[in-house]
Image (cartoon, rainbow, N blue to C red; front, side, top):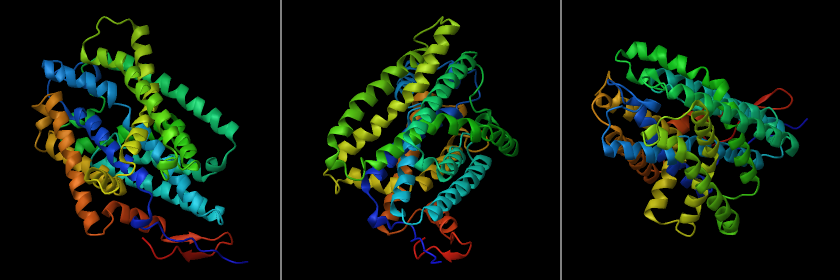
Length: 396
């Protein structure tokens, strides 16, 4: 039989800019969502925020909870589905090899996630994305619409249930959602982070499956690859998604910020479920960002976001490094001394630093180091249907 070789990964200059611009912008939301987890060393209120916050802190907590928390990761999950379908569509002549390639990428993402969780961040999402890639590589990417709809509905129901449960637990106050972020012993923090991360390998993929499938649907229609021809659809997604994300987050945001008090358990559960499910409206952010940069390929902001998005894995990991250095008790320990407003500024500063690094790498014509490593590991060998192995091509 003839053994077909798969080409290496797409060159930077051949990538569609739309998904990368969206990824670069979404990383700002992720930095804003992560930074408050390091607030520690004092009594905590609902959601792990300090109970003694100022009026400015209270306003920031409200705004972040309504517009940022739980909105970034569904977008990133959708972009994961988008990217995997792009990979699949480039290699339709070798479906068996492509599935193995996607599964290999998923396995290495789990390894990356383990290292990231052990060293830096117990809320790591790379492991969950790796599990989702395994599911897509196992056949979900070509599953019938009936099955994908059923899985998406099930995923949304799981998200609603999880949101209600987490809200009920959070209203007890006094504890951080991620206790490892307040641990002063660096070695003890490693053990705590891994106990926080391991359950996420099961729970997070279940909750994000609907977003991944939505991204796969968008990729089949090339919404971000060819946005000029998809303006009407993108506008519709933005017009529906943004109000869903923001308005759906308001009740829980009011509770977390202390504007809405004396809630019954039923109200708490409903607000938490609504906040969690409405996070899927975050895909409207990606649509809005794409619309904003149509025809502005040389715009400095678009160029910077695209550079960051092309190196989203490196930027994500670098954010974690910066936040640990700035905020962890065993490092500079600013998380024990600043409030929600200041920590939001530090989160934005961390993101901006990753953007600057990405732009410098772009000008040098280099991939991010994490992307380069993942590509070398993923494309190192491609197993043929007959069992032989061939080099995967020239690109890393």
